[in-house]
Image (cartoon, rainbow, N blue to C red):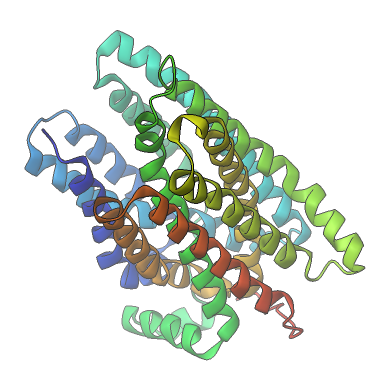
Length: 376
Protein backbone atom coordinates (compact mmCIF):
# COMPACT_ATOMS: atom_id res chain seq x y z
CA UNK A 1 0.00 0.00 0.00
CA UNK A 2 1.12 3.52 -0.73
CA UNK A 3 2.16 5.33 2.44
CA UNK A 4 -0.09 8.38 2.27
CA UNK A 5 1.62 9.99 5.23
CA UNK A 6 5.02 9.69 3.51
CA UNK A 7 3.68 11.32 0.35
CA UNK A 8 2.05 14.11 2.37
CA UNK A 9 5.25 14.78 4.31
CA UNK A 10 7.40 14.68 1.18
CA UNK A 11 5.37 17.50 -0.35
CA UNK A 12 5.81 19.73 2.68
CA UNK A 13 9.49 18.86 3.12
CA UNK A 14 10.04 19.82 -0.51
CA UNK A 15 8.18 23.07 0.12
CA UNK A 16 10.36 23.80 3.14
CA UNK A 17 13.60 23.14 1.23
CA UNK A 18 12.75 25.32 -1.77
CA UNK A 19 10.84 28.07 0.07
CA UNK A 20 13.76 30.25 1.26
CA UNK A 21 14.97 31.17 -2.22
CA UNK A 22 12.01 30.39 -4.48
CA UNK A 23 10.32 33.70 -3.63
CA UNK A 24 13.37 35.65 -4.79
CA UNK A 25 13.17 33.82 -8.12
CA UNK A 26 9.50 34.83 -8.37
CA UNK A 27 10.31 38.49 -7.75
CA UNK A 28 13.41 38.56 -9.95
CA UNK A 29 12.25 36.68 -13.04
CA UNK A 30 8.61 37.76 -13.05
CA UNK A 31 5.36 36.86 -11.31
CA UNK A 32 3.54 36.04 -14.55
CA UNK A 33 6.32 33.66 -15.61
CA UNK A 34 6.17 32.06 -12.16
CA UNK A 35 2.43 31.51 -12.53
CA UNK A 36 3.07 29.85 -15.89
CA UNK A 37 5.69 27.59 -14.29
CA UNK A 38 3.13 26.68 -11.63
CA UNK A 39 0.63 25.59 -14.27
CA UNK A 40 3.23 23.51 -16.12
CA UNK A 41 4.26 21.82 -12.87
CA UNK A 42 0.65 21.05 -11.99
CA UNK A 43 0.06 19.47 -15.39
CA UNK A 44 3.15 17.28 -14.90
CA UNK A 45 2.15 16.38 -11.32
CA UNK A 46 -1.35 15.32 -12.31
CA UNK A 47 0.05 13.32 -15.22
CA UNK A 48 2.40 11.48 -12.84
CA UNK A 49 -0.67 10.38 -10.86
CA UNK A 50 -1.42 8.02 -13.78
CA UNK A 51 1.46 5.77 -12.63
CA UNK A 52 1.34 3.31 -9.75
CA UNK A 53 5.06 3.51 -8.99
CA UNK A 54 5.70 4.87 -5.48
CA UNK A 55 8.93 6.52 -6.67
CA UNK A 56 7.07 8.43 -9.40
CA UNK A 57 4.42 9.50 -6.90
CA UNK A 58 7.20 10.74 -4.61
CA UNK A 59 8.62 12.77 -7.50
CA UNK A 60 5.18 14.27 -7.97
CA UNK A 61 5.13 15.30 -4.30
CA UNK A 62 8.58 16.92 -4.60
CA UNK A 63 7.32 18.95 -7.57
CA UNK A 64 4.14 19.57 -5.59
CA UNK A 65 6.12 21.26 -2.83
CA UNK A 66 7.56 23.67 -5.38
CA UNK A 67 4.22 24.33 -7.07
CA UNK A 68 2.46 24.96 -3.75
CA UNK A 69 5.01 27.64 -2.88
CA UNK A 70 4.38 29.26 -6.26
CA UNK A 71 0.61 29.02 -5.80
CA UNK A 72 0.70 30.88 -2.50
CA UNK A 73 3.14 33.60 -3.56
CA UNK A 74 3.30 34.27 -7.31
CA UNK A 75 -0.41 34.85 -7.90
CA UNK A 76 -0.99 37.11 -4.90
CA UNK A 77 2.19 39.14 -5.42
CA UNK A 78 1.28 39.61 -9.11
CA UNK A 79 -2.22 40.78 -8.21
CA UNK A 80 -1.12 43.18 -5.44
CA UNK A 81 1.53 44.83 -7.62
CA UNK A 82 -0.73 45.01 -10.68
CA UNK A 83 -3.51 46.52 -8.54
CA UNK A 84 -1.26 49.40 -7.54
CA UNK A 85 0.35 49.77 -10.98
CA UNK A 86 -3.09 50.45 -12.42
CA UNK A 87 -3.79 53.05 -9.75
CA UNK A 88 -6.73 51.27 -8.11
CA UNK A 89 -7.60 52.41 -4.54
CA UNK A 90 -6.13 50.28 -1.76
CA UNK A 91 -9.65 49.93 -0.32
CA UNK A 92 -10.57 47.75 -3.30
CA UNK A 93 -7.94 45.20 -2.26
CA UNK A 94 -10.14 43.95 0.60
CA UNK A 95 -13.02 43.36 -1.79
CA UNK A 96 -10.77 41.44 -4.17
CA UNK A 97 -9.51 39.14 -1.42
CA UNK A 98 -13.04 38.67 -0.05
CA UNK A 99 -14.43 37.69 -3.45
CA UNK A 100 -11.46 35.36 -3.93
CA UNK A 101 -12.26 33.56 -0.67
CA UNK A 102 -15.93 33.29 -1.64
CA UNK A 103 -14.96 31.96 -5.06
CA UNK A 104 -12.53 29.44 -3.57
CA UNK A 105 -15.23 27.90 -1.40
CA UNK A 106 -17.87 27.89 -4.14
CA UNK A 107 -15.57 26.40 -6.78
CA UNK A 108 -14.34 23.77 -4.30
CA UNK A 109 -17.93 22.56 -3.92
CA UNK A 110 -18.37 22.50 -7.69
CA UNK A 111 -15.00 20.77 -8.09
CA UNK A 112 -16.12 18.03 -5.71
CA UNK A 113 -19.20 17.37 -7.83
CA UNK A 114 -17.21 17.38 -11.08
CA UNK A 115 -14.56 15.11 -9.56
CA UNK A 116 -17.23 12.59 -8.59
CA UNK A 117 -18.70 12.66 -12.11
CA UNK A 118 -15.23 12.17 -13.62
CA UNK A 119 -14.46 9.31 -11.23
CA UNK A 120 -17.72 7.58 -12.15
CA UNK A 121 -16.87 8.02 -15.83
CA UNK A 122 -13.08 7.52 -15.94
CA UNK A 123 -12.29 5.73 -12.68
CA UNK A 124 -9.98 6.97 -9.92
CA UNK A 125 -7.73 8.77 -12.42
CA UNK A 126 -10.63 10.82 -13.82
CA UNK A 127 -10.33 13.76 -11.37
CA UNK A 128 -6.62 14.12 -12.17
CA UNK A 129 -7.39 14.23 -15.89
CA UNK A 130 -9.98 16.90 -15.20
CA UNK A 131 -7.37 18.85 -13.23
CA UNK A 132 -5.03 18.75 -16.22
CA UNK A 133 -7.72 20.20 -18.48
CA UNK A 134 -8.59 22.99 -16.04
CA UNK A 135 -4.93 23.85 -15.46
CA UNK A 136 -4.39 24.15 -19.22
CA UNK A 137 -7.35 26.56 -19.34
CA UNK A 138 -5.82 28.59 -16.51
CA UNK A 139 -2.51 28.67 -18.38
CA UNK A 140 -4.19 30.14 -21.46
CA UNK A 141 -5.76 32.87 -19.33
CA UNK A 142 -2.45 33.70 -17.62
CA UNK A 143 -0.72 34.17 -20.98
CA UNK A 144 -2.84 37.30 -21.45
CA UNK A 145 -1.54 38.98 -18.29
CA UNK A 146 1.03 41.77 -18.15
CA UNK A 147 4.30 40.91 -16.44
CA UNK A 148 5.47 42.54 -13.22
CA UNK A 149 8.54 42.13 -11.06
CA UNK A 150 9.62 42.46 -7.48
CA UNK A 151 12.01 45.32 -8.07
CA UNK A 152 11.89 48.94 -9.05
CA UNK A 153 12.83 50.28 -12.44
CA UNK A 154 15.98 51.83 -10.96
CA UNK A 155 16.99 48.51 -9.48
CA UNK A 156 16.64 46.78 -12.84
CA UNK A 157 18.76 49.45 -14.47
CA UNK A 158 21.44 48.79 -11.87
CA UNK A 159 21.40 45.13 -12.87
CA UNK A 160 20.33 43.78 -9.51
CA UNK A 161 21.21 40.13 -9.00
CA UNK A 162 19.16 37.25 -7.74
CA UNK A 163 21.50 37.09 -4.75
CA UNK A 164 20.71 40.69 -3.89
CA UNK A 165 16.99 40.06 -4.22
CA UNK A 166 17.39 37.08 -1.90
CA UNK A 167 19.46 38.87 0.74
CA UNK A 168 17.33 42.03 0.67
CA UNK A 169 14.24 39.98 1.42
CA UNK A 170 15.89 38.37 4.45
CA UNK A 171 17.25 41.74 5.61
CA UNK A 172 13.77 43.23 5.49
CA UNK A 173 12.42 40.39 7.65
CA UNK A 174 15.24 40.95 10.15
CA UNK A 175 14.93 44.74 10.23
CA UNK A 176 11.15 45.24 10.27
CA UNK A 177 9.47 43.46 13.15
CA UNK A 178 6.03 44.00 11.58
CA UNK A 179 7.02 42.01 8.50
CA UNK A 180 8.48 39.31 10.73
CA UNK A 181 5.33 39.15 12.85
CA UNK A 182 2.91 39.05 9.93
CA UNK A 183 4.95 36.23 8.38
CA UNK A 184 5.06 34.32 11.65
CA UNK A 185 1.29 34.66 12.05
CA UNK A 186 0.89 33.25 8.54
CA UNK A 187 3.16 30.29 9.32
CA UNK A 188 1.44 29.41 12.61
CA UNK A 189 -2.14 29.77 11.38
CA UNK A 190 -1.69 28.02 8.03
CA UNK A 191 0.41 25.32 9.69
CA UNK A 192 -2.47 24.69 12.07
CA UNK A 193 -4.95 24.52 9.19
CA UNK A 194 -2.86 22.00 7.22
CA UNK A 195 -2.43 19.81 10.30
CA UNK A 196 -6.21 19.87 10.80
CA UNK A 197 -6.77 18.98 7.11
CA UNK A 198 -4.62 15.89 7.57
CA UNK A 199 -6.60 14.82 10.65
CA UNK A 200 -10.29 15.52 10.13
CA UNK A 201 -11.21 12.45 8.05
CA UNK A 202 -9.46 9.87 10.30
CA UNK A 203 -10.97 11.57 13.36
CA UNK A 204 -14.56 11.36 12.12
CA UNK A 205 -14.17 7.84 10.69
CA UNK A 206 -12.61 6.67 13.94
CA UNK A 207 -15.72 7.71 15.89
CA UNK A 208 -17.88 5.17 13.97
CA UNK A 209 -21.15 7.14 14.00
CA UNK A 210 -24.37 5.23 13.13
CA UNK A 211 -24.68 5.05 9.35
CA UNK A 212 -21.05 5.97 8.77
CA UNK A 213 -19.54 9.33 7.82
CA UNK A 214 -20.79 11.03 4.62
CA UNK A 215 -17.36 12.52 3.91
CA UNK A 216 -18.51 14.09 0.63
CA UNK A 217 -21.33 15.94 2.37
CA UNK A 218 -19.02 16.97 5.22
CA UNK A 219 -16.48 18.31 2.71
CA UNK A 220 -19.20 20.29 0.92
CA UNK A 221 -20.38 21.74 4.24
CA UNK A 222 -16.81 22.78 5.04
CA UNK A 223 -16.40 24.46 1.68
CA UNK A 224 -19.70 26.27 2.18
CA UNK A 225 -18.35 27.48 5.53
CA UNK A 226 -15.29 28.90 3.73
CA UNK A 227 -17.61 30.75 1.34
CA UNK A 228 -19.61 32.19 4.24
CA UNK A 229 -16.37 33.28 5.91
CA UNK A 230 -15.41 35.20 2.79
CA UNK A 231 -18.84 36.85 2.72
CA UNK A 232 -18.61 37.85 6.39
CA UNK A 233 -15.15 39.44 6.10
CA UNK A 234 -16.11 42.92 4.91
CA UNK A 235 -19.17 43.34 7.21
CA UNK A 236 -17.02 42.20 10.16
CA UNK A 237 -14.23 44.59 9.24
CA UNK A 238 -16.75 47.44 8.93
CA UNK A 239 -18.31 46.55 12.30
CA UNK A 240 -14.94 46.45 14.07
CA UNK A 241 -13.83 49.68 12.38
CA UNK A 242 -17.03 51.39 13.54
CA UNK A 243 -16.67 50.04 17.08
CA UNK A 244 -13.05 51.21 17.26
CA UNK A 245 -13.93 54.50 15.50
CA UNK A 246 -11.00 53.95 13.13
CA UNK A 247 -10.52 51.86 10.01
CA UNK A 248 -6.74 51.74 10.30
CA UNK A 249 -6.64 48.68 12.58
CA UNK A 250 -9.97 47.06 11.70
CA UNK A 251 -8.33 44.31 9.62
CA UNK A 252 -5.75 43.58 12.34
CA UNK A 253 -8.45 43.12 15.00
CA UNK A 254 -10.54 41.06 12.58
CA UNK A 255 -7.55 38.73 12.30
CA UNK A 256 -7.28 38.48 16.10
CA UNK A 257 -10.98 37.58 16.28
CA UNK A 258 -10.62 34.94 13.55
CA UNK A 259 -7.62 33.23 15.16
CA UNK A 260 -9.22 33.19 18.62
CA UNK A 261 -12.35 31.60 17.13
CA UNK A 262 -10.18 29.02 15.34
CA UNK A 263 -8.35 28.26 18.58
CA UNK A 264 -11.63 27.75 20.44
CA UNK A 265 -12.96 25.49 17.68
CA UNK A 266 -9.90 23.23 17.90
CA UNK A 267 -10.19 23.08 21.68
CA UNK A 268 -13.51 21.25 21.22
CA UNK A 269 -12.06 18.00 19.76
CA UNK A 270 -9.10 18.32 22.15
CA UNK A 271 -11.42 18.31 25.16
CA UNK A 272 -14.06 15.94 23.79
CA UNK A 273 -11.64 13.23 22.68
CA UNK A 274 -9.81 13.50 25.98
CA UNK A 275 -12.68 13.55 28.44
CA UNK A 276 -15.85 12.20 26.80
CA UNK A 277 -16.99 8.94 25.17
CA UNK A 278 -16.49 9.14 21.40
CA UNK A 279 -20.11 8.33 20.58
CA UNK A 280 -21.33 11.43 22.46
CA UNK A 281 -18.94 13.85 20.74
CA UNK A 282 -19.55 13.41 17.03
CA UNK A 283 -21.97 16.33 16.58
CA UNK A 284 -19.86 18.72 18.66
CA UNK A 285 -16.65 17.82 16.84
CA UNK A 286 -18.28 18.02 13.42
CA UNK A 287 -19.61 21.50 14.27
CA UNK A 288 -16.14 22.58 15.42
CA UNK A 289 -14.73 21.43 12.06
CA UNK A 290 -17.31 23.56 10.25
CA UNK A 291 -16.38 26.54 12.44
CA UNK A 292 -12.66 26.29 11.71
CA UNK A 293 -13.36 26.19 7.97
CA UNK A 294 -15.45 29.34 8.44
CA UNK A 295 -12.37 30.85 10.08
CA UNK A 296 -10.28 29.77 7.08
CA UNK A 297 -12.66 31.58 4.74
CA UNK A 298 -12.56 34.64 7.01
CA UNK A 299 -8.80 34.72 7.60
CA UNK A 300 -7.86 34.17 3.95
CA UNK A 301 -8.87 37.69 2.77
CA UNK A 302 -7.71 39.15 6.09
CA UNK A 303 -4.24 37.68 5.55
CA UNK A 304 -4.07 38.99 2.00
CA UNK A 305 -5.01 42.51 3.06
CA UNK A 306 -2.49 42.50 5.91
CA UNK A 307 0.32 41.24 3.67
CA UNK A 308 -0.42 44.00 1.16
CA UNK A 309 -0.41 46.44 4.08
CA UNK A 310 2.86 45.44 5.74
CA UNK A 311 4.97 43.74 3.04
CA UNK A 312 6.52 45.98 0.31
CA UNK A 313 5.42 45.10 -3.22
CA UNK A 314 9.03 44.66 -4.36
CA UNK A 315 9.56 41.76 -1.95
CA UNK A 316 6.11 40.15 -1.81
CA UNK A 317 7.20 36.89 -3.42
CA UNK A 318 10.41 36.64 -1.41
CA UNK A 319 8.82 37.40 1.97
CA UNK A 320 5.84 35.11 1.45
CA UNK A 321 8.11 32.20 0.54
CA UNK A 322 10.55 32.86 3.38
CA UNK A 323 7.74 32.14 5.81
CA UNK A 324 6.70 29.00 3.95
CA UNK A 325 9.82 27.51 5.59
CA UNK A 326 8.50 27.66 9.18
CA UNK A 327 5.00 26.91 7.88
CA UNK A 328 6.17 23.66 6.31
CA UNK A 329 8.17 22.86 9.46
CA UNK A 330 4.99 23.25 11.52
CA UNK A 331 3.05 20.98 9.14
CA UNK A 332 5.74 18.30 9.08
CA UNK A 333 5.93 18.37 12.88
CA UNK A 334 2.14 18.31 13.19
CA UNK A 335 1.80 15.42 10.77
CA UNK A 336 4.50 13.46 12.59
CA UNK A 337 2.71 14.20 15.86
CA UNK A 338 -0.40 12.41 14.57
CA UNK A 339 1.67 9.20 14.43
CA UNK A 340 3.11 9.45 17.95
CA UNK A 341 0.54 11.39 20.02
CA UNK A 342 -3.14 10.83 20.82
CA UNK A 343 -5.48 12.83 18.60
CA UNK A 344 -6.72 15.03 21.42
CA UNK A 345 -3.16 16.21 22.14
CA UNK A 346 -2.56 17.10 18.49
CA UNK A 347 -5.79 19.10 18.41
CA UNK A 348 -4.63 20.83 21.59
CA UNK A 349 -1.36 21.76 19.85
CA UNK A 350 -3.28 23.12 16.85
CA UNK A 351 -5.44 25.19 19.21
CA UNK A 352 -2.29 26.63 20.80
CA UNK A 353 -0.89 27.48 17.35
CA UNK A 354 -3.96 29.57 16.57
CA UNK A 355 -3.93 31.20 20.01
CA UNK A 356 -0.27 32.12 19.55
CA UNK A 357 -1.06 33.57 16.12
CA UNK A 358 -3.82 35.66 17.73
CA UNK A 359 -1.43 36.96 20.40
CA UNK A 360 1.21 37.96 17.84
CA UNK A 361 -1.44 39.56 15.64
CA UNK A 362 -2.67 41.55 18.66
CA UNK A 363 0.80 43.09 19.02
CA UNK A 364 0.45 44.37 15.45
CA UNK A 365 -3.03 45.68 16.19
CA UNK A 366 -1.76 47.80 19.08
CA UNK A 367 1.36 48.94 17.18
CA UNK A 368 0.61 52.57 16.28
CA UNK A 369 3.36 52.96 13.71
CA UNK A 370 2.19 53.84 10.22
CA UNK A 371 2.09 50.61 8.22
CA UNK A 372 1.52 52.33 4.89
CA UNK A 373 4.53 51.89 2.65
CA UNK A 374 5.70 53.35 -0.59
CA UNK A 375 4.59 51.48 -3.65
CA UNK A 376 7.75 50.12 -5.21
